[in-house]
Length: 127
Picture 1 (cartoon, helix red, strand yellow):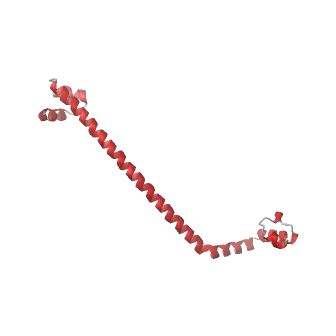
Picture 2 (cartoon, helix red, strand yellow):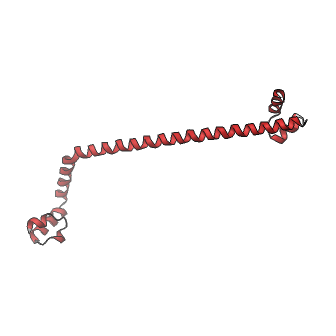
Picture 3 (cartoon, rainbow, N blue to C red):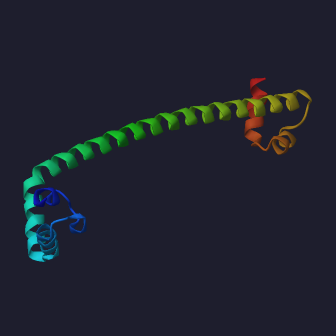
């Protein structure tokens, strides 16, 4: 019965009063607990370092993977944004060309299209 009780962690679950008293005293004694803690740290120090190193490597790999995905996504969004900017600029140029073909002056076109007079003049030259 004592051997069975010693496999249990909680003295309240033990049938043997000898085992329950021994565990209660052991758990309640700070000196014994400190010695036990030091023993556990020394005994399992190398294994804990291995586990910590493995965890660090895993975290670094996940971080690298995340950063790669983020970079790829950022590149895709920048490409889309640049394409949209180019399309927008081309539409503005088309509108300016249309207004030029109607005989409007550069300053009026500039105000309507919200662009510089120089841009209108440059497109007029290309026409």
